Length: 199
Image (cartoon, rainbow, N blue to C red):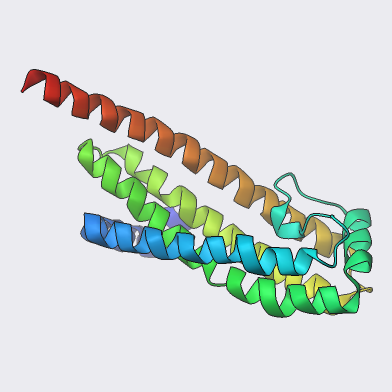
């Protein structure tokens, strides 16, 4: 296993040091704002622009439970050539920026609040890796979508299945992260009110 090897352990240590060093309030807030500006741009500009061609069908990026060959064929047929080009040249390029920002900023958001609980040096710190996993899965999903778009209509069922698998991994890791973040925020709030009550 990679993380059990000497090289893997060293990389893990460097990553943890990076997280500890950069989980200060100003850096976290700045990255959080930038990430959500890009996300808002996708939600309000690039995704609606692409969906103008889709006859109401959801884009592959927006399907947390995955999709099959039949759905992809139907979607790409509905999009037509202009829609597929819009997907490839407008939505995907922005979505190649977002996973990096999401992975780093939400990793540091979690680290910031774990530091408030004095838990950043405990095993709980591995919760910080959930958004990184989601970001990596998002990149794999995007690469798969690019391949399928470029090969339309001759893409294979295995290409769709692999891409769909990464969409599901992205969805699960993102959901787990936000559940964990809500739990951590509740604990931070409880501690805060306890301090106020005891002061």
